[in-house]
Image (tube, rainbow, N blue to C red; front, side):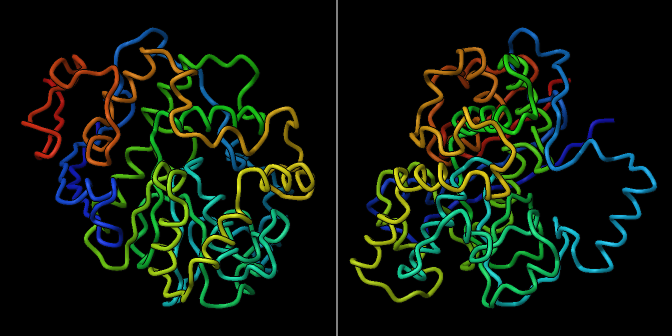
Length: 360
């Protein structure tokens, strides 16, 4: 039996300039039925049986031998095991959360350079300054000075009480993830995008659920809280100083214009690309990965237009049209008046409540 979960999403722009584009989020509400597996797939070829993807973060180690089990147990005792999703929290922890490939690393650089511009952030020191529990041991995470700002890609976790959530157009997210997984050799050269997009839309391409489930889970539960700041990657690339000022206010960091501008300069795409070339062999994310595919790619909103076919775009838009509309991402191919034949929708306008239900 398919599992079905109803999620109400209420979005508001509480921390920004009401005159900015992000103010369009104010008052929008979306009720979404999130279904499993292929329930959200649109039309297109090669969608009924997509090729299985090699999942990251050691998913192939599900059946461990005795030696690997012994090593894992020893690491746990010594505090050298990776924290992953479950780790001790402190009341003053703040989380920087996003779906993978949504600009989280860039935002970490911005925040780290805002806090201390005399010691600029690099790939060599970013994990010590704004740690990622999935990439470090319990002992390393416990040694990070408080108050901590912690990076995460996790789907909703009720223990995360104060957080910044960064969202990006899912059409750009799927393209960025595709090339990142090529870089990590999780998928082979020539892996068909016609098969990658359905996997991205249905169950997701890693352990962080699908883009829609990850985004909707956090927005539905946290968007009305004063301890929640919603940022859009596209707004950050357009007005980085304005968006970083919102972050500074949320984190209670006293700043001035010069300090904001300095942090933006130190976190520029050009500088990060230069750092990547210098440090790719030492940073654990890029170590032993393909050097012909950069970690920092185009970093340009809308790059999906030159990569995805109309059919691939339609699959994404039909799956998540209510969430995308609430966030200000306009559909370009999918027509809500002519929905996916497996789905029906009720709603009068993008600002009205929208409900997706399964056709019997």
